[in-house]
Image (cartoon, rainbow, N blue to C red; front, side, top):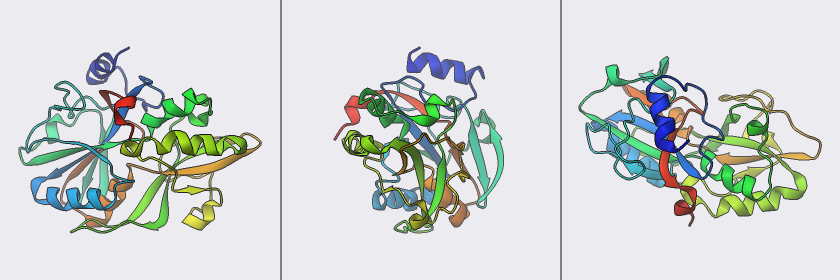
Length: 256
């Protein structure tokens, strides 16, 4: 199915699962929605932390509809699952945020590592969570983000077990796509970045390693959710981890 057809099914509630592996070849995006008074601070936070928060599109104040990453898609209905935060606390997960919409909202679409997984597969690098039908595991690290205004906190990373002999190939494939997080931030030794148990992710699902696999960590677009929990705005809306906005833009357009 095309991205537009997938979004139509999501809007109807026919797809509520994570979007890993969907519409291979097309970019996926993270979502952050904030009241306007926080928009500049978040824009500055994203610009100071471009590997974690590579901006793909910023919608006009009050607009629910994309212009550049998809043709008039509704970001209030076209994502499988959303998270509602109030004063930094996750209060609800929903499949439609129309009832929460405010005219002072500003929405941000941020590059997602699901976009480069097609490049990994094309390079014949296995993607274990897709093989196992799971969401990608994501971890909160001890790597501090550059603060901006009210937003601060540590980086979240996504982890993929990569066969040792293919790590260089994985790095090369993803480094060519800086608009969707680019090269890994860390390879091996999860404890060095504050991860104590690789089998217990903070977000997403645990995945099984195959003999010879090495954990490889990429900056992750769930980082803004950690920053939102630290900043505690009165209301913020994000995608649920792994439940992304599927764009009409091909990954090849986002290279370099």
